[in-house]
Length: 293
Image (cartoon, rainbow, N blue to C red; front, top):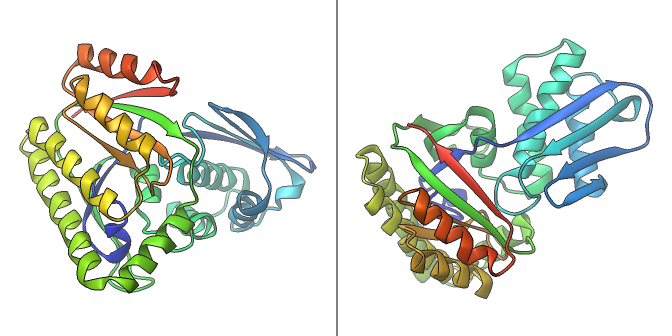
């Protein structure tokens, strides 16, 4: 909900695991394909996806080419909704069950390696959301190999509406771009990271106090800071504006930016309908989530 990009640089973030995810199917049987189904269709995995999947099953003493394997994703691919982490967690847990080897710690290790393949310098926040669910505060480890600090939070009921407004951009590419910006203009970008971290802490306090109005306002502030980092685009800005016009308490990009999805915090079911109506008029696919306390 708060903290994209700054979390990679060691600042606090707040995230939630969505009540949609992935289901992996593994069974013995040689095949040359690994199929991924998602809301936009289905495709045969190759490249980084295939490399990550192969590494996951090998962590449990299995060979991908000796398995009939597929993953069904309930969220769009590469849109800032944690699809790669959901895929990795589902596949690792299926491999653990089929092999009868390992525990949840091995699952986490396999997922972390896969996320590094997908995203390069991943913060670990997506895999934490996929593994644990719920709303939580997150800060990456102080040094490579150190475990992240994860603190579960008590949050009020949250009505979230998500729209996929543009083709996704590579997370690794976006992260590298922000790194490069920070190297060129440290006096401007480091304070921006710090401000995003402060927004995340304030957002955490608002959520724990049950103040969804303030939580939404802070989403808007976070979006402005992400725009300053150059990771927003015209479609994201337009979607945020439309959502706020329709009564959203707050709206911002989710994920690395450059494309993908916008998330809006809605005050009630009627405004959820109005937000969806505004977005669907632009032919943007929409998803609704109700997170119980």
